Length: 222
Image 1: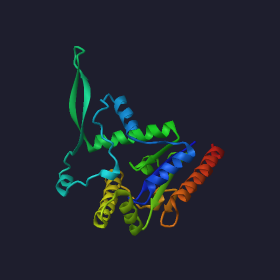
Image 2: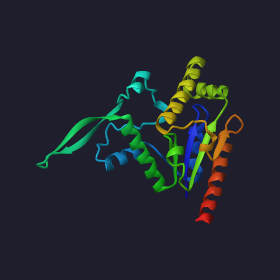
Image 3: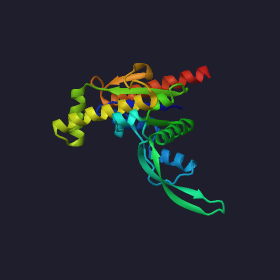
């Protein structure tokens, strides 16, 4: 079948569209369980592993960037074995480079298994050149996104506006820092959907149709 990556502006309805597409196609969602599996394959404990996604990314300070400081993003526990075979559970720190490497490995593992929907996490870059992957970008006018966040999150207008701006900045910074790409670059995507023009259900069916055409083309080319 195929893999779908979805990059979405906060409040654009991208998560709802992904849910609807998953219902129609029967695809699985990429989530923390895939990252935990990758962690176990690396010899790490499954507890306290971070799903290092773009939504919650915090931009490094100027001094951290200037001096290339190692920033801890999570703690984890791993098993260490001594020379005499004694295993000990120790707590260690996970920095940005290690976290992003784990996420990349998990995304590639999902691709190998097929039939996944990957939301965010740089999937449009990690799998950019892989066959059988549809890269989708979901956008909407700022006013529409603020209105949707107001309804779904129960925030004040000021809080909703602040949330939209901060989450967009976080995602943009994540993609630029770790993949050196512009989040809004249309060439990263096969399909860009403006939910200011299309409803959730219509957008989902557009993606389903695009997946069908892509799978047919890959089959013919292969």
